[in-house]
Length: 214
Image (cartoon, rainbow, N blue to C red; front, side, top):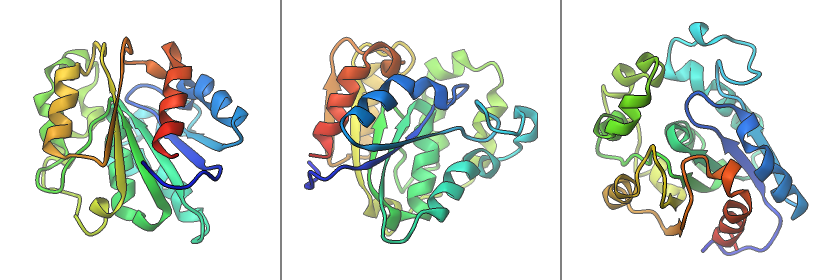
């Protein structure tokens, strides 16, 4: 576990086709514990000023997260929490700003390694492919060209994984495969948790997050 009982700054990153709104229950719970919380809308999502058709690259998509971290004072760090496809944006953020991220928590999320292109996992996830209305939005071609992560930067950030045992989108077996391919420092499993754990079991997720950083 992460050693430090001080109050933290959590930055919550949503999955595909969602927005900052999906975290509202967790935001309230974390704030009640005294933590600072920022829930971001990625490019073309939620209240972000651009429309989806204006987002033409993964860079456009993750720019709000990169802008937020770039503006963060150098003496401050945050805990990144990514859900589902949100694991890809937080991984790229870890590569760009490893010194500003104390811990990255992947909640039933894609967690790439430093050897394979990020899309290797997405292409292996048949359930996600079945649910895609607009597959171009996951930027498969762009993310499949090369491995975008390095051991020196992405690999320098502590990683934790939260398994949702009853996830109907990213099934438990696939989550454990992700963990096997790129083992994190800590793994916590939540029984009865479906894909949208932040809405269905926010208290359990909150407890899990605070346990991981205690």
